[in-house]
Amino acid sequence: MDANGNAYYNVDCISGAQEFLEEGSVDLIITDPPYGINGDQLHKHYNRNESFVIDGYVEIPKQEYGAFSHAWIKEAARVLKPGGQIFIVSGYTNLYHVLDALRTTDLQEINHIIWKYNFGVFTRTKFVSSHYHILFYGKPGAKRMFNLECRYGTGESAAIAGSANYQDREDVWIINREYKPGKEKNKNELPSALLTKLIQYCSNEGDLVADFFMGGFSTARVAVGLNRRFIGFELSERTFSSRLETVKHLVPGALLPDQRQPLLLPIRNQGLPWSAEETAQLSQRYEEMMAAGNGKRESIDKLCVEFERGYWSVLKALKKSGTLERPPARKAKGNELPLNIS
Ligand SMILES: C[S@@+](CC[C@H](N)C(=O)[O-])C[C@H]1O[C@@H](n2cnc3c(N)ncnc32)[C@H](O)[C@@H]1O
View 1 (cartoon, rainbow, N blue to C red):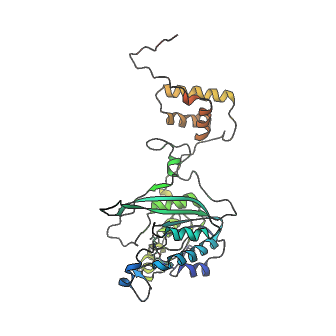
View 2: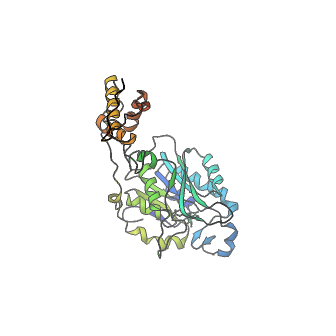
View 3: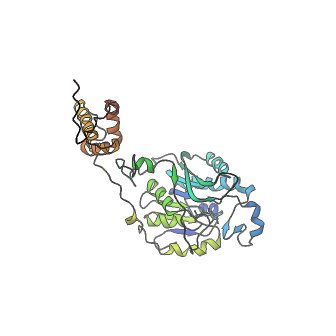
């Protein structure tokens, strides 16, 4: 345990959860179990102290993967609070075992996220494998935490086009692995950007985050950095002792000042019905903005501020009034006289 009460255990996660985690005590689990794909090579790396160790990484033999997944996922479901949530990162090979185990619990599927990373497995005779699956499940019984505007306000435009908030919440994520030349790191270490996103959306400061397979302690570093409490397990003695130093002196909340602040619009009229007069005014202002050379997205963003309403509300009102179907008035060029069609 560190000075701030965060706990790191060098034990098997199943017995560790049974011993150190009470039922219904965890807000969020983010975890990345061993993938069970090195079974054939285990004999080459066998180490007496850590039954199946590959470079300090404890792997699960292929034939045990199903039973192992059932056992740890049962524990994960037990320790989550009602309304608590879990993200499980998985490769494709044993994904069916993880899904099968999840389906025997009361956890409910929320999303299936595809994480596309760089440095895929190089091939010449087939396509390059460059994604993982992130299974997002929730425990029923209470409202789930989803911080809709923790990264982008719903009215913010994306860099090229569209809504930044919508794009950030699409279920295909392109996030590069971290390249740390010369630094010791755990095989398959998850990037901080990925962990930050999961933690920001699905927990609040002070919440308890757990990782059943800590590896290089990446979840711990990001969780504590974002001022969450943390508890985690790692079975490999070698991995655990070599990475423990990286979390001993973490300052809770140290990563918070580096996070982007969402631009939140005042949406005082949210939820109020649109009057006929307000709709007419909205249509007129939209047409004026388009005629002045603004794009559709830009015009709607400005209208959100003027009318103090959210993006979707403005878009819906414009659609309902038929304004979006009318061709925009063409902006007159300098030497061009407006056409006078009577
Ligand atoms: C895919 S890695 C986790 C990587 C981690 N998310 C990171 O970012 O570094 C899986 C880890 O689980 C550990 N492990 C395997 N079996 C375990 C068990 N029964 N309990 C706890 N940890 C275990 C492995 O030693 C390995 O470090």
